[in-house]
Image 1 (cartoon, protein in one colour):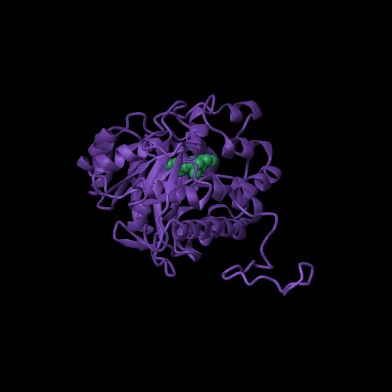
Image 2 (cartoon, helix red, strand yellow):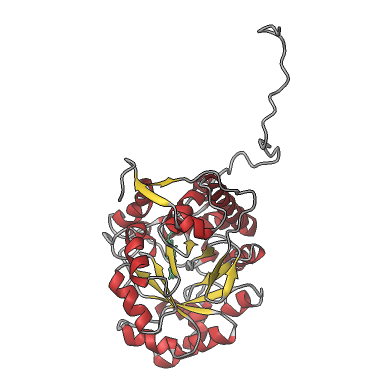
Length: 375
Ligand SMILES: Cc1cc2nc3c(=O)[nH]c(=O)nc-3n(C[C@H](O)[C@H](O)[C@H](O)COP(=O)(O)O)c2cc1C
């Protein structure tokens, strides 16, 4: 009989293989946010982290995940997972993309090039903003899957020139952002007096408008965006993804007017303060679209478990915004890579633990509120 005090061999814990080389400081996306806050100067920090006015929508994007719980399934073989998904004719290895965020050179001298390289290394589609601080041709030269986000310029010649250039550069889809009819009032930027520092420019606007780079920030966007604008951009023959959709009727109309996909988004809480949380808008839009087109989602995703929730509510794939900027500010291309790897690993782990070998199983998961009730 073994004595109570006899030394015991370590318990064999099947599957428990802690990585001795794991980074113990930057364990999750929240750690990257904290690290980025330490690194960024006051202007870039305000610009990246801020939302509009009282930041109700910014907070609601996060809080909407807290209100929802997954009902996991069991007894399904999840030894092999397939997290891939078809989006506009391309198979994405993971249901994630880098959603466009402006001015990435505020975070790191390599800016968008570093983020795009990290995305490319993982087969993820990279969204380049009209307001990027890197020329679209330089990102295209990396050769990865890429979408170009369009703000329509006021001048008709410049407007057309920018779209034609994106198509020439091999961008596979044009993402028309619909929720920036005017710039939201971002009070953190006002308080720190944020301006674009010299040395950081907007080359895609400058080239299209034919102005010197230092004047690009003054080039106006159209103030008359409407459904005809969507039809016009669709007439170039590339798939158009309408970003900033929050109302089911707008999602239907988007498809009627030529969009190939929609992005449920409130611009990370930076435009209309008080706009509904992206996650709360998602189910209604999924229902309205009824499987006719991909429904992408962004807003507040900081965990693979949160990506799982959005996918369970019917998103085809999810966009990652600020976490990419935090990775970039913390450690350039490597930091963005780590942020993406963490999200991918967390999503795969949560798929397995929810009993989902693939995304069609995820789409069937039941989501309840945090009291366990139907929503
Ligand atoms: C600093 C910053 C800049 C952004 N710039 C753009 C942009 O140029 N075009 C655009 O369509 N969306 C832009 N967005 C919105 C993002 O594409 C996305 O909708 C949002 O960041 C998603 O929320 P998340 O940051 O919580 O992931 C920006 C967001 C941030 C935080």
